[in-house]
Length: 137
Ligand code: ZN
Image 1 (spheres, rainbow, N blue to C red):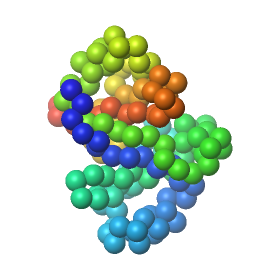
Image 2: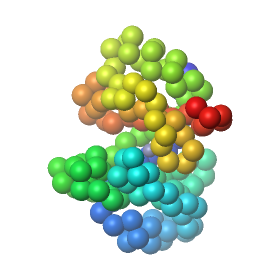
Image 3: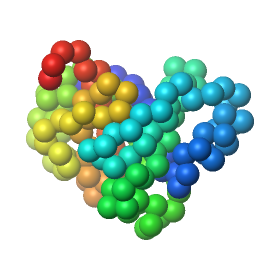
Image 4: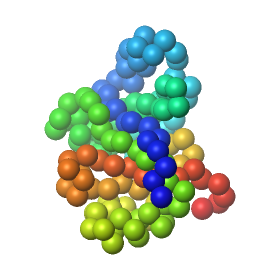
């Protein structure tokens, strides 16, 4: 089951500059910065009420974020939904005809297991499913 929007991811060129910008916008500082080396990305997170905003800066010129910015410029990159059972959701969505980019969930930022759905199967929107990591999975 998909529970709620967990966060919205925004691709930025320079996370320091954007942290300052979004701090002004929200009136609050980011609460964490995290490198996800496997994705070639540096992230920062802001809490906005019950929601979160994730800023993403490429740390590697071959990373998906670098490619995204080269193609489209800065902006909304993905919407992430919280799920209880990511494996069950992968199966359910594949049965519904969605294209899952990574069938095996991987470790994302903020202690999550994540998978992405290909935008070609979701009206051009990159969708992330994420599940809080509890054990050694
Ligand atoms: Zn995300």
